[in-house]
Length: 131
Image (tube, rainbow, N blue to C red; front, side, top):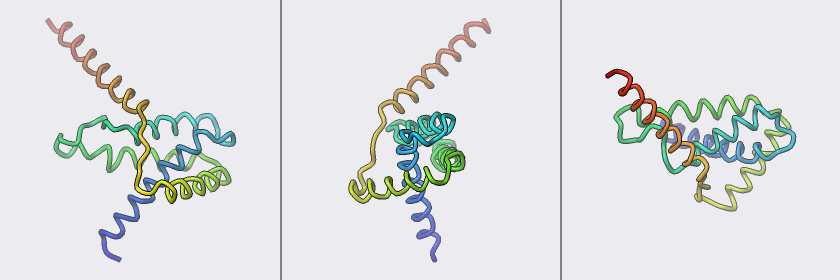
């Protein structure tokens, strides 16, 4: 198997698992801590805005290549196996029905914008305290 095919399969599993977490967040059998992490991960994964913009060399792709897959992996491990299997089946069905269409999360975009505003305020306060 070529490396490009392996990467495509890995990316497909990541996308499916992000949609799986979307269903797990709403599943009554998922523990509260898994739901809380799923809400954060799904909001960020489906946000049209990245926390670290892609135009920043190296760091721009760090969240897409390491942070997001790591959070998805952790969240998948926190969900009970029976709930996970049911949510994966629902995700597979949803992806077959929707095709390449990716859901969007305006809550995720708002979260990213709030983080950037918080960083800007903290930086401004730090600069004012230095003088």
